[in-house]
Length: 88
Image (cartoon, rainbow, N blue to C red; front, side, top):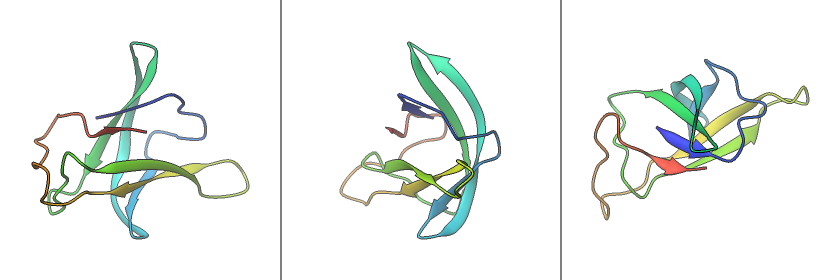
């Protein structure tokens, strides 16, 4: 999961990228405590750590966006499935 102030330009099935490579999809967009809550489906082959960062980036001039993930590093613990990843 990830929380953000705004989900504008993101759609269900928007890509999640690492270094320009698709590693997952935005599965669901919801609302939690006044913030957009993103449920992400990320490849199980990718280690994601508590110090990961997630950024919404414009993909096209039409206003569609993708999520760019920096998965963090081993200086922080690994995130388990269904844990909060980061705030956007």
